[in-house]
Length: 61
Image 1 (cartoon, rainbow, N blue to C red):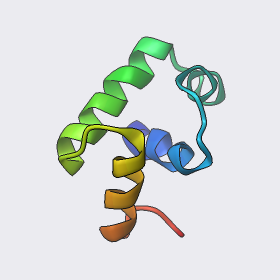
Image 2: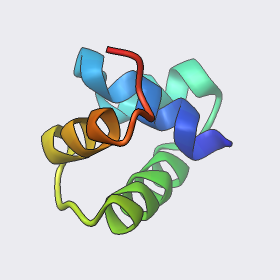
Image 3: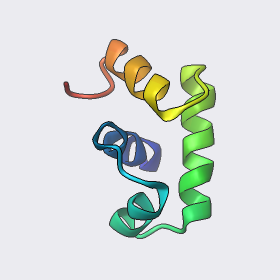
């Protein structure tokens, strides 16, 4: 569930620090969620994650 919350903030270009502040998480936890997102979407960066998530209808465009 938190991975979706993190993923939802990526299209706006939100930094790791600001994601952490917004979701009341540590930066390390956000990085862990990002790593899991990248692995599940088979991507290696935020831009690719957003593109893959949109293709799979995980994000509202």
